[in-house]
Amino acid sequence: MQNQEKQKQNKVPTHNKMGEMPVGRLIINMSWPAILSMLIQAFYNVVDSFFVSRLGEEALAALTYVNPIQFLIISFGVGTGVGINSLISRRLGAGRIEEANLAACHGYRLAFFNWGLFAIIGLFFAKPIMNLMSDNPYIIESGVIYMQIITIGCVFVMVQISTEKILQATGNMTLPMICSIVGAVTNIILDPILIFGYGPFPEMGVAGAAIATVFGQFLSMCLGQYLLFAKEHSVKVRFRGWKFDKQIVKDIYAVGAPSILMQSIGSVMQFGMNLILGSLTETAVAVMGVYGRLQSFVFMPVFGMNQGVMPIMGYNYGARNRKRLMETYKKGFLIALGIMSVGLVIFQLFPSQLLSIFNAQGSQSMYDIGIPALRAISWCFIPASFGIMTSSIFQATGHGFISLWSSLIRQLVGILPLAWILAKVGGITLVWYSFPLAEILGTAFLIIMLVHIYKNEIKRLDEIA
Image (tube, rainbow, N blue to C red; front, top):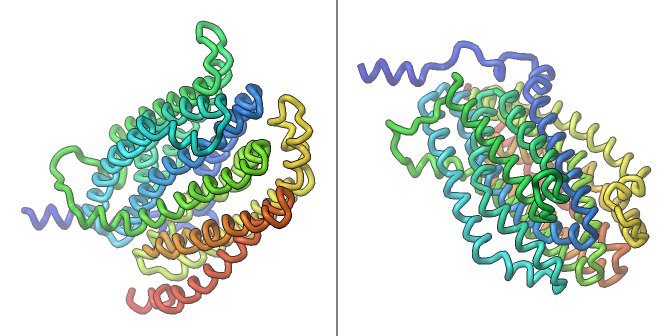
């Protein structure tokens, strides 16, 4: 009886679109919900900063100083989710259904562990961090309040990200999109109400922006739990009848840890850039914050497509189908390159119009510093399209540490040292070119590693199918 039950649990699904549907149509089918969700998230980021910028450049600078902590939260959530997604999709592709269920069970609970880490940071380290970043009392006070609310309330976004990645690993991209849209729209609606105090709500300034963010994440999480537990899916998250397995956690973080570290490196990079820019002028810090919001309209669709192609590549890698794996990678890269090229043209032609969205007080220094900054940094878009898609194939095939090394080369070996040198040599004018120069270094490394992995592993998939 037990053997029959085990066979039933590990029975390979008769049909799965990730192994059968034409790749081009499949990428669109899998990616458009995540792309739409990411675009709405990007719109939220812009709207959030738009309203905060109405409080002044100092308020915008305070949020920019907190950005590295927010990125760390997302890094841990998404990195763990990438590991969950990769493991589930590979187990489904190999027909090991019960192992996919156990991966989902473990991944769901890891979200609460990650939340505890950031709650401690918010409670005990918010003020020391802000004191290190600035000596402006308003910026310090606003940053501390914002950081504490975001970190203590991040339990909702941690649980929701794990939920979304579990659903995406089964090929379901629409339900995670709905959850993200609900959270982002709620956030957008609440931002002006809580920041400026409309109706029965008091004016809360920067704190209002943080509360709006956390409440949006709460609603998104609630909807995600309903969709995960009330609907039928290819995998099931159980609260009973499972045992903690160190090997499963190890398998999740074999891909997830490099992803966490890779994205966390971005937080370290921004932390360092804030220090370098702040030593020149805090207007440059505000400009960096503006760029971060604007570039999300270019990068978020590519990241959304990345969410769509990763389970496809992971599934076909598990099924040992080299042709579909590589076809997905190539077509995904071409789409990413097209999106990034459009973004480059917009940043080159319309920098002043983009900056005007956030320059509520008409500060000329924002334009003087921001226009050359947007034009210089945006040259990184083209090589970044290759970097994002190539990192995704490493993650989908269980080689997440290669993506980690690429990120280290770009952001720590590249951007920060280059930014420091260029700031010393040419001041604020040259410092922005550290971004495209570092991206070129990362691209060269990824090309070498892709050729190596293809020759030694991917090329042989069909031979042992």
